[in-house]
Image (cartoon, rainbow, N blue to C red; front, side, top):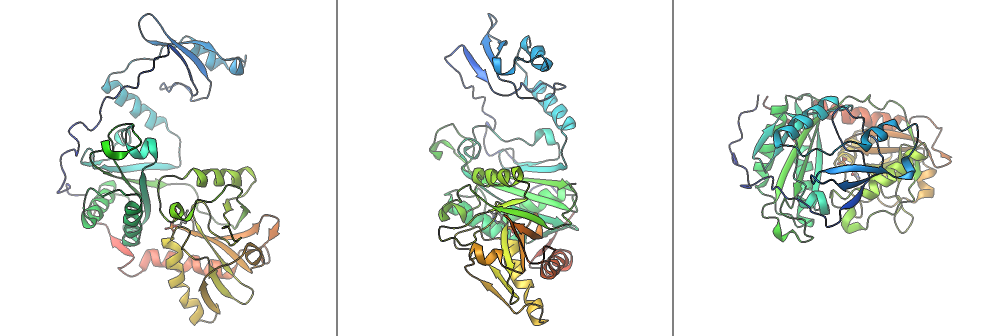
Length: 404
Ligand SMILES: Cc1ncc(COP(=O)(O)O)c(C=O)c1O
């Protein structure tokens, strides 16, 4: 069990959750989503709302778009008043929401420098709406895997995290070793032996301005979660992304601005693929929305694109180190980090996606092109085994034990 955090016990902000009320001069407006009431199925139906004489918001009219005899729930909601809740009612409703939440992911612990501690209650794992990361995307994040009670490549991920923070002009609230200590203690408190640790540095809460000058203290948040979705067993199909990739200045930092990445993933899913691959301005392979890409050429060279204009993947860099074993054993002719065009990539013997979430995932088809013989390649399989072994029994530089 984690010992208590030696610092900072007190909330950074004296008023960590300011009761900011956004007022609107108009008496009538549209709500584009369902009103989240415990027990009411979450659905999307635009409502026209207006204020009753009591000042409470009343759903008065349903737009034509949803006036549909099959949409009985929306008719129910026609007469539903939006309640004004006390803080304890909000907490109760958040608890109910978390209990009813259906997901393969379970949230085990959260740290927030705003409340200055760790909670294991998912209903309390909240951050403020006026946090500059929430309403302006002014935050950076990173993720490290928890494997058999150890954090894998934690220091490598923290190094990238702090570089991203510096590029986003966010001064961390604590020094690097204190951040590391907080992260380790959060995993310890979660009792999680196998899962993920995700953490954010934000310009912090303050106000709704564009400038972060009103955000008095940057914030550190971290969450430990367990994902129960089944592991990837088979190779996947990818497409070429039609969503423009981020310019290098933004692609090399892991900021929370993942809209291009999300749209790219959605484009892939809409086309029955696992991921969409970005090409740079010269037509060279760049990366996927949350993974790097590598190839094995017909002359058995492992090729990975330069990291200059894309995210410097911790897993991909570790794969480059581990792959040296395959070169020694004669199963790879060499390893090269350099340019590779889409045409060269499509003609490769093997293609694979690499990242902390997927580890090494073979690609069997890119657009209409079958890669190699259309089967999971031997090198991808061996690299997956090497990285799995490294996670379980690698050197201390990549495995940080958690003191539970
Ligand atoms: C855009 C992008 N590229 C590559 C990666 C792979 O990085 P890592 O291996 O450190 O997970 C990620 C990871 O989230 C990513 O978001």
